[in-house]
Image 1 (cartoon, rainbow, N blue to C red):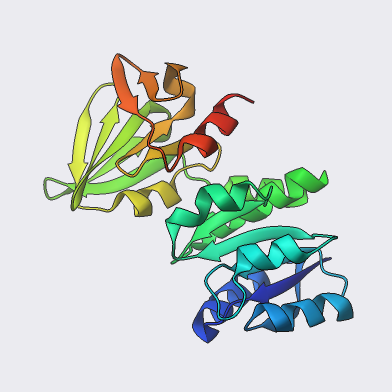
Image 2: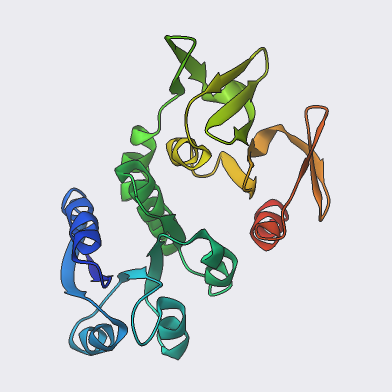
Length: 232
């Protein structure tokens, strides 16, 4: 049983995470808190294996809170602010979830926790939730796109262009929403306008991804995260 601590100053956000935790048999809600001070006390009272931690909270934010701890459990950040991503991953956290958080994305984060802890139990659950196809609406139809065929996705304001091996489809959707539907280890955000398929990347440097004859920029915001992932 994995003891979880949920820390968020928004009651509805805590309830959403708690509902997800209840849907995974191996997870147990040990306690919930609305700020870092309460969380510190909760850590003294309980053996916590995994913290779901908001970042922007009153008095002490989530990043500062983690930096004060000596023995840090697994940490999954839950936040509405993408700009904390690089700073968060510098702390070697399990994952960084952007609100609103889908259950599929939640499961992927739990899978990463189990992989790091050496267990395989939840891995199979999470993988079974991963679709082989992405369904998107375009031209008054629903297109069933095989994930393996996707090369990259490009944001076009209120639309996203999905570039595949044999076609390109433009759908009225946000890039962040589609990113959540893709496999955790199969795709990576390199820029606020681009998500790419890792296995389609031909080469890269500190500024650019070279993928299927295209050169896509790596933005400063994502550079550290992208390079740490691709240089493994």
